[in-house]
Each structure stands twice: as structure tokens, then as C-alpha cells.
Image (cartoon, rainbow, N blue to C red):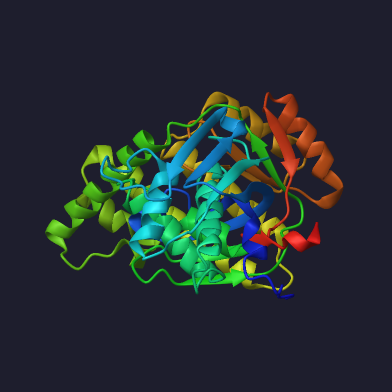
Length: 373
């Protein structure tokens, strides 16, 4: 790393790149503290900041057609709910962080908004990374620390039902197996998944209401079992044991409970495959299909356009495909042999998708060295 003699030279102009992410396995698992397998992908949010002699951040968000101003001495007395950038700044200030000069900031990218690939978390991770860098924080290069702060700002401060997957996956990059419980342990796999495709439906997803509803049903089912079996832990149940446990759950909650158990088993199976070198792509595709079927049949989170997109991908030769994220819109992923990638992309688009494209695993959030320019 080159050090300039001028101490503030590399703080005058800061550019941060934060990837999108997709969930390979474990949708609707993290709110039950069950593990997920996510993958940072090479679509990016870019935050470009230039120091200015003022006491504010002037922030342009051209993709949203918005701009906003945050004062360096903001007092947060009106709260931060609904304002992610303010929330991130509060978390930074709560650490004792301070920034001496204002900045003009542009945040934009090629990550579709509200498409299930985490544009908002990518913005948050980029923003936290910028604040730590501009504030000369000793842990500004600690990506796990960045992930934790982004999670605090986006979930804890906002009182939101999300898990840790988005912030950790985007900050740390690569393919991640994440235990979403209190210990938050994770394993990173620095490998590509050849033939991975994202298809965007263009239907915005009603994330929070849907997540909140399915989360409360799943927890109710667990509580019902715990009334009879106080030591019950959903993470220890295999699908074969469902016949034993389903009768302990009231009828309307059974599909959600069954989905949780089956999806957990599929995620653990997929982990074994991802640990292999080389990975058996056909097997990963099969597991994706099984996962999708549960999300579709038991949780009911697909919509006709998503069904058309997944059917089209499989008809064009995809090894596997599934809806991503909370559902009722958003995006799908598909896995294809390299020679079939373009054909599968075309089929997904022909089925009515707003967009479809091949993606690669991304190394995670990074500050671009401005002397590279």
C-alpha cells in the first residue's frame, strides 16, 4: 500500500464498491436462527465521496431520484427509523466516531432496487465503510466489524425482522455459510459457481410484511412444541422426524414448520457439496430445485411470473433454479452448464423477466485506491 506524505490525501476522495448478494440456500431460515448459504455477486453499489469545506454530507442518490443532507453534528433527536443513512451515521457516532470535514457523496450502481438482491444492504455496507475510512477509525479495514455495524444500523436500529445474511455476505464477499444465531459463526469459500444466473421479475417484493407474517407463524409452531417438549430445538430435527412433531403443531402452522425443517436439511446438504472440490453442479442444481419446491408449495411465496421464469429456465436446460429471498416477487437464481448459460438467460427473459444475467462470486466490499485512477 502506498502511503502519501500528505495525511489527508487518501481521505479527500474516497470510492467504495459494495456487491449485491444472492441467497443460494436457506431462504426463510435466518429469522429462525438457522444457517444460510449466500453468495456476493458482481453487481455493485458505488459510493463516491469528495471532501468539501462544509459541515454536512450532501448525498445524491440518482438511482432513486433523491438527494439528502446530513449534518456532521446531527443530534438524532427525531429518531432514525425509516432513514437508513441517518441510522448508519448514528451507529458510527455511537462508537465515538467523528469526521472533521463534510463530503459531497454520490451513491449509485447497477444493483436493481427491491429485486431481492439486497440493494439497500449494499448501500448500508458502502456507507459504513466510507464513514469508518473518512473518520480514520482503527478498524476501517475490518470487514467483519463493518458487517456488524451495518447489521446494527439496518436491523437493530430500525427494529426490522431481517437476519444478518445480507450485511455479512456483502461485507465479507465470496460464498458464505453463515450460522445466523447468536454466535454468528461463518465459513467463507473463495470459489466461483460457474453458470450462476440471476433473473429479475421486476415485481417489487413486499418484504417486511411477508417476512414478519411467516416469521411469527414459524415461531408460534416452535412455541406450541415447546409447551410439550421444553428442550425442543428446530436445528436438531431431521425431515424423517416430521411425522413425530407435526401432530404437536396446530394445522394452519404445519406447512411453515415443515418448510423450516426441510429447508434446513437441504441447506446442510448443500454445504457438504460446496465444501467438495470440485463441486458437483448437478447435485447443487437438484438441491436448488428441492428448496424452491418447498418455498413454492409449503410457504406459497411464488407468483405466476416467477413460476414462468423458473419453468423456462429448466426447460432451457438449467440444472436448478429457485426464487430468492422473501418472495412474492423479487428475483430467481438458476444454475446452468457453461454452454447453456446464454440459452437459459434468453429463456428467462422470454418468460417475461425484466432482466437476466450471468453473475460471478465477488470478493466483498472494498475501498478503491483513488491513486488507481
